Length: 158
Image (cartoon, rainbow, N blue to C red; front, side):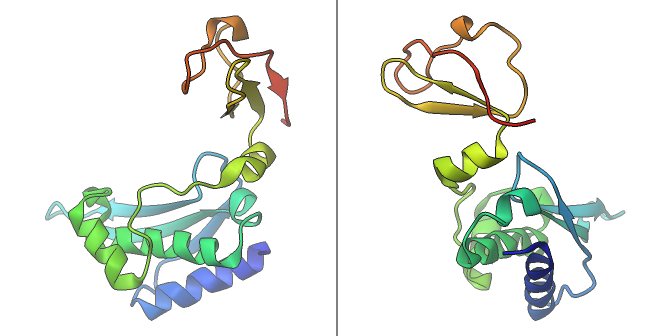
């Protein structure tokens, strides 16, 4: 989906759930697909202030996954962002039709397209993606899946 389609879809879904006053902002984020931003209220609650969507990631995903991401964030607004990914949020997900999972598996192709660096395990072949240059030499890192050594750092894009 193109950026304007993402914003239009988000505005339509927000409106359908009574949140038409929430502005939609697209970002170049690499670390999140969507983010529900809210202001704290005096009574300890929160009020929705902005929906942030990563055009960098969402533009690479199918329409259904973009819609699910937006609904995921709308569920945060409905449940209250202070609830995180608890039962209240899961119930709100079911109510709006979103997948009540905390994170989405965006797959290796998308991950590679939005990440800056990659380390590959020499034993199991598992790829590990990073957005920040590693602090230590790659030889100091181990695979999170099997514990094996990882190969040299590959620069994917800056």
